[in-house]
Length: 298
Ligand SMILES: [Mn+2]
Image (cartoon, rainbow, N blue to C red):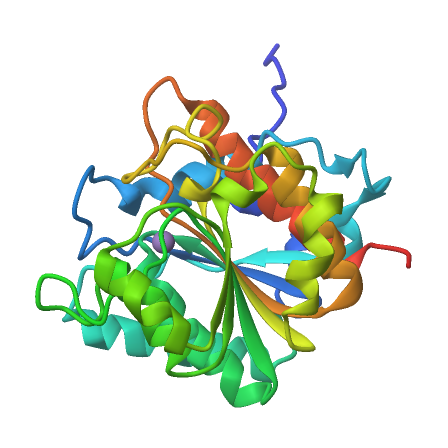
């Protein structure tokens, strides 16, 4: 007699069942963007989206903090991995822009999985077309404020400089930048919360000040190197002295309560053999964030 095995979970965010992942009814839509064109140190972030999806299939779908099954409550669809190999970088960025805009027009909450940080500006510019009072909350080790890097204004190192051409920003966890960036900051539409001022302090002490600096509609971009590398070693450009899980989730909990998040991206995961805890952190961070957006009772 044939032994019956359970079917493998579908390869989509959370491994959700068809009903909870149906595009038509899902409020959140995951877009895997394995972009890797301008990385400058360790390479491999193109494998980031697949690693996050794989880890997410092993998550408990009940959120113990929010006491809710976020996937079932929200509905989370997962699109096919975007083609980031064909054509020039500018074409790919344009495709990211039109994809995010189309999702927002259909009332969806886009969740972009990177891939390198250069995917953020075209997504932000799409959100800014829909929400005129948009600001960007960036959680990152690096300021990413260079005017141009290695001759490329679309480099990952310029992501936030491009964002500031569209809307203001609040940057949290910053601990690495060039002299030129530091010189430019006072005249840019940005507010910086330096890692050195946050490390060791619970979010409750400083998160209200971050939230107060944000406009009503917020695009969230999380560069995973914002976390301390002891916790998140799997990034291409790690920096010591980073944020904790409790600090980041504490901040996002408050943002979810007090502002309208309209889209998010999680970028720069560099999947590393043996360090699957990092992939899992990224997956749970996304799931928890969706819970903060859709499942918090005020
Ligand atoms: Mn970055």
